[in-house]
Amino acid sequence: MKKRITILILAILFFVLNTNAQNIDSLKNAVEKLPDDSLKVTVYYKIAVSSYRTNPKETHTYAQKALKLAEKLDVKTEIAKCFHILGIFYAERGDLKRALEYFFKSLETLEKLGDENRKGVAIGAIARIYQMLENHERALEYDIQALDIAIINNDSANIATNYNNVGADYNNLKNYTQAIEHYNNALIIAEKNKNIKLQALLHLNIGYTSRKTTDLKQALEHLNKAKKLYTQIDDKYGLANTYNKLAEYFNEIEKNDSTIKYASKALYLSENIGTITAIREASGLLSEAYEKMEDYDLAFKYLTQFNELNDSIINSGNTKKITQLEMEYEFEKEQEINEIKHKEVVKRQQNLKIFFITAFILSLLLVVFIFSNYRLKKRSEEKLQNLNAIKDRFFRIISHDLKAPFTAFISMSEILSNPNINLSKEKTHYFANSINKTAKNSYGLFQNLLLWSMSQRDDLKINKTEIDLNKLIINTITLLKATANDKNIEIITDIPSSINGLTDENILKTILRNLINNAIKFTPAGGKITILAEANKSYTTIKVSDTGVGISESNLTKIFKPEVHHSTQGTNNEKGTGLGLILCKELSDKIDAKISVKSEIGKGSQFILKL
Image (cartoon, rainbow, N blue to C red):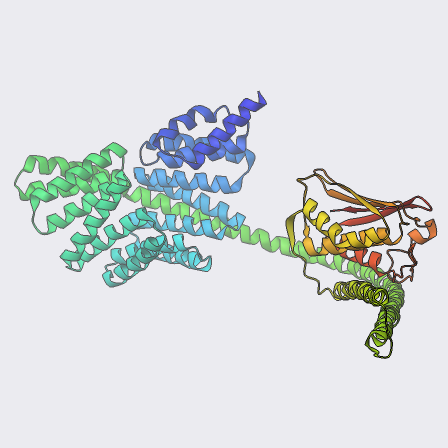
């Protein structure tokens, strides 16, 4: 059952994100079966929005369903959206009183939420109602507010929409220059955003306004562009308005046949979608055109229809109710302000109490701070002592462990370069081999010192990549094979052929080289070193085990501590600095790996690295 519900939810989410006319019916059938009410609200709202041009009754039904459920869940963002779509529905039907009521409810909800972006949209919608009531000064006032909000929010889509709305207000106030300027500002943004629907509306508005400036060529050009774009996106409402504006254009230049042609198209489309404002406009144009053609029966028929629709949209009762609504809204806002003032008085009284409590708490905090500062100072002193110990060790290694090999180089090179000393072939080979080994050991020490120094200064660059561990381990063993062969030590590996790890390749090589080199040093001749690697979902583990002398329990606590000097000679008296294992610990921390050790005297040691 749960599986079926999950599939249903995924299917509905797909339809919601890819809604078209074919998907609407599928959404209606599936939405009632949803167990999640919040998802139901989203789907109801989506159906309402998708239907409002093609099936307005369903817009109202599903918007009310979404609103009822959103109010039950107290989801204010969804409540505001439902109020808005219902406002659009009633505005399209000519019920301006109810439209304004819903837009004000949406605005009030958004103000409480502090949603500035959607608030701008609600203010713009209120402006549209004033525009329909021909209160153009008030419409312009609200539209400028909406435009300012969109500019503050850097919302390009709403900036374009509000430029268009301000342009419409200036057009209605007969300031055609300002109107076309604002329309063009909006058109630039709409073309940049590839918003075809808004481009169509702007071409329609520019065409309509250009006709009033007597630029008839530009007017017809923009109206035809609007018609083409609305046809392209199959927007019947926009197409009906465009047909009406083309009818007006031809009516003005006394082309009655074209006027009737476009007005009839507008009437047919607007009657199908139930848009009263477009029906009224088309009826008025048809009445005027038939009167010019002296067909008075048809002229009277369309004039009657025009007057009936006009009276239903704008009447004194409607305007009175709208004014009352606005006053109620302002009164509610005043009440909210008074409530806020009352809360401020109470808050001041509470603040006085809080002041004394805060003073007491601050006194306690001061005592705690002084005590903490004392402890911090003590810790800092301890840390400084550790750092001094590390520094001393660093200089000891430089002064002693690097000095010794150079002394050997000088002594052996003096013997080899002295012409008075006649060396046999075996002696010459012995000295050359000694120089080679000393140079390799010194270089290894120098590399370790350099890396350790970089890690202490945080200069070490970490570059984690997916690496082939099998290949990396085999290559590292190859470099140390000759040293192992000198002591007749067998190195055994058990590494899967396809094992990977996410780490820094160079750092991991350094860690493994030190661990294997350490195992060779402390394993007697004829011993064994085993290297294993395994992986699970959480981490990859590399183990380096030897059959060497082992480490005592007391020394196990010292080997990874840089402030404690610990160095032991190998089974063939190999010298060490104790730096190798400290470096392994430092580098492991840098690549987020964990290093640990198990050991038993006389049986050997095992170093475990977890990546």
